[in-house]
Amino acid sequence: MFTFVVTCYNQADVVPYMLESIKYQIEKFGQGQEFQLIVTDDGSTDDSCRVINRWIDENQGLFAKTDRLFREENAGICVNYVNALRHVEGERFVAVNGDDLIAPYNLFDITAKLEEYDMICTAFLKFTGEGDIIRSYNTYLEVALQRFIRGKTLYRAIKLGFPIMGTAVYRKSLLSESVLDFILGFRTVNDRACFQKILDENRDIKVCYVNRPIILYRISATSISNFNSPTRTLHNQEVAKLCRIERETEKSPVFCLLLFLQEKSAAFRISPDYFVRLFRFFSPYFAIMLWLYLRHYRDIRKMERRLVDAHWEECREHYGRMGERIGSCPDS
Image 1 (tube, helix red, strand yellow):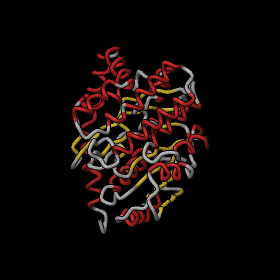
Image 2 (tube, one colour):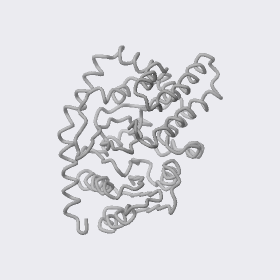
Image 3 (spheres, one colour):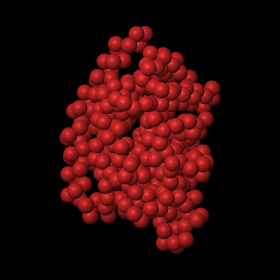
Image 4 (cartoon, helix red, strand yellow):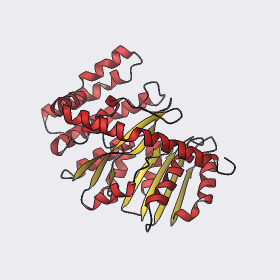
C-alpha cells in the first residue's frame, strides 16, 4: 500500500488542488496499486474540513483506506505531522502540505528507488499567484546541492540546519518512536527535526538525488520561506534550538563552535531590516553552501537549468489542469 499524507490548516481554497494532483497520480500512474489517504487538519477555522470531506466522499473509490484526522483546536504543524505519520500503513509514503501540488511526473518511479536506497532526495519548483512558476535558477541552488552532499558532509549539514531534504521520500522504517518524539519538541520545523534525528540514528544511510520536481511549492504571504510571514520568527528560533540541541552532544570542539555560530545567526535571519539579514551569509551554513557551489559550479548551473527549463512549462500547465478539474466539480 502506498500512502499519501496531506497536512492542512485554513487552506479551503487551495487544498482541492493538492487532492486533485493526488488523484492525477493515481489515475495516470497508479494502476495495480493500493492507496491510503491520510488528511490531517489542525483545527482550521475556515471550510477546510468540509471541502476535504466532500472531496473524499466523491473520490472514495480511489483508496483502499482513508483517515480523516481533524483536530478541534490548533496544535501546530509538528503535532499534526506526527499524528498523521503514526497512521501510515505502507512502507512507501509521501507527506505534503495542503497548499502545494504533486508535480505531473510519475511519483511511483521515484519511490520505487527505495528498494535500493533508504532515502531519495528530490527537487521542487516554486510558484506564486495563479500558478506562475518561479524561473530564477538561483532559487534552486539548495535543491541542486543535494546531489553533492553525502557522507560526513550530509551529517554535518543537517546538524547545521541545512534546509535540504524537504521533499525527500524515505522508508517508513526510518521513523522510529524516538524520531517522532523528537519532532514533537517543536512547532514549525517538522521536516528539519525529522531528518536531523533520522541522520543521528542512521549514520550510514544510503541516499540518492533525482533532479526532477516531485512537489510544486506555493509561495504565499504565510509561507515560512517568506521573510514577512508571521511564523518566520518562531521558525528561525526553532532552527536555532536544533543547533543548540546538537551542541549538547557534539564531541568536536570545532563543530561545537560552528553550531554555536549557526545558532546565533538566527538573530540576523529574523531581523526586519534587509541589510541586517545580509549578515546571515556569514554563517557556517552558508560557508558550506559556498564551498560546495564553488567546487561544483558547472555541474550545479547545468542542473539548475535542466530543472527549470525542462519542467516549468509543464508544471504551470499542470496547475491549470488541476484548476479546471476543481472548476468542474459540483458545489465548488
